Image 1 (cartoon, chains in turn yellow, purple):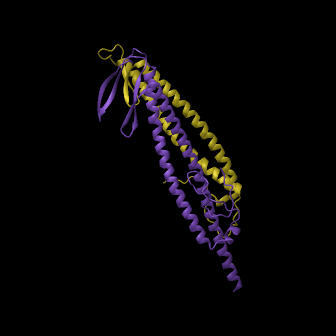
Image 2 (cartoon, each protein chain N blue to C red):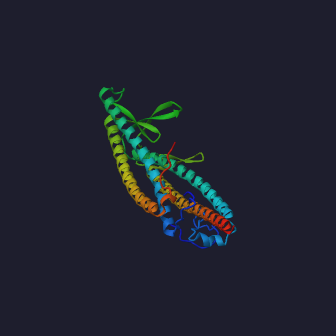
Image 3 (cartoon, rainbow over the protein chains, first blue to last red):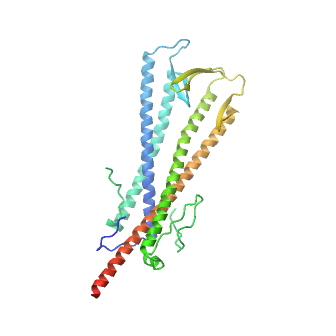
Length: 141
Length: 194
């Protein structure tokens, strides 16, 4: 909040206003956290989709190794790569993808709710304080 | 989670288990400043409180980052255990594991010879224990839940801290404005007298 100009009367801040300002700050932080998480989930989804494509391609052109009936692909479980058949790998990739998509949808919903409440609080606070408060993110240079 | 404590105590009241001091909200700046020496002193005091909050926030953010990085480790270990549990009793698993940097080696994990399958869990501090797989899974699930709880508490503390932070910033702005207004009044009065 910037100091007053010499001719503007300052509006008094009530406890309720302080609570609204606090709530806005909280929501702002939450919004940033959710956006970061969403970015990570999107990257995961892209990786999983790419992995699935590569496995499907390999399934068509690859050859089984010695002593193996089916073509095997190493799937990372924890710290080790476990040899699995291509079908099993694709199945696991699909279920991972489904998990991540569900989580992403939940986060999107949360972000929407947070955004709506932030907009309401913004209009309330700007109506009361006008120039004396700044609720917009600073432009990054 | 708003501040309801509005007494005229100094802002050093500890009201949170992790000792985040409570920032009092100033209902009436004029009344508050009657008891105080000068605006500069008050602003300096609030500024110190502000820096304290910044420091606490840094600590909490580090803690949160650490907990957040532990979660995927525990989850992936749990995944391995679930995978071992799921496979058939006569299935042998072939896997690639990292022997050292850029060197991987093949390993064959034989099926459990009897009904009891055991795993070895690294507990830290150069200690590794053998557990039956059931117990290992329960232990890891408990660890995962504890980690999630700590993370939630850390986030709650951060939220509370941010509230105090915002209240302090608003207080600083209001005291500063009050001071500016007072100086202008004095100036107008002194030029009016002349």
